[in-house]
Amino acid sequence: MRTRVKICGITRLEDAMAAVNAGADALGFVFYPPSPRNIGVEQARRIVAELPPFVTTVALFVDADRESIAEVMQKVQIDRIQFHGNETPAYCVQHGRPWIKAIRMKDDVDLDRLARDYEQASALLLDAYRPGVPGGTGEAFDWDRVPEHLVGKIILAGGLTPENVSEAIRRVRPWAVDVSGGVEAGKGIKDKQKMQKFMRGVQLGEE
Image (spheres, rainbow, N blue to C red):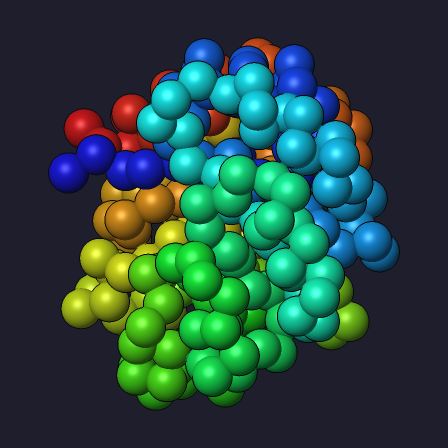
């Protein structure tokens, strides 16, 4: 099975095209003003309008209100929503798009229970936990905590880099991996060579 790849935190058209050309299946756009990777609606609209076919676009929100989500959905061609805060299952289903729920891997996380609670999610994205930081920590968690029976619904995130992604894939066998800071030259600025090296690492992990 081929591991899908999402490159998140896109803020520039040249980075989006470099990610696609490297082989990324999906691009993530962060609509969360406190994030250094936050993008405005108009900039996201311009980037998405230039993308080639069959690239999945994902909008990331953190405890956003309905109006903010609706504005993005109306103005940007978004395929999926990623909820990265404390959104309830009932809230996640209200926005007219398939959705992903991010789970911060605290010590007491019960993934089986969360998989049941968020059963309508297309995937659970597992990220490292740092108090007060909803994502993008650049830290990894213990990959052995991922139950084997859930891996088909798992997007593995948190501290992935070109250097460790092959090991992560061999150990977890997730449906997809998600990277942001691990392929950056600076906050919100992607590095073309790092993205290409990351994709090679993904391929090595599948062998």
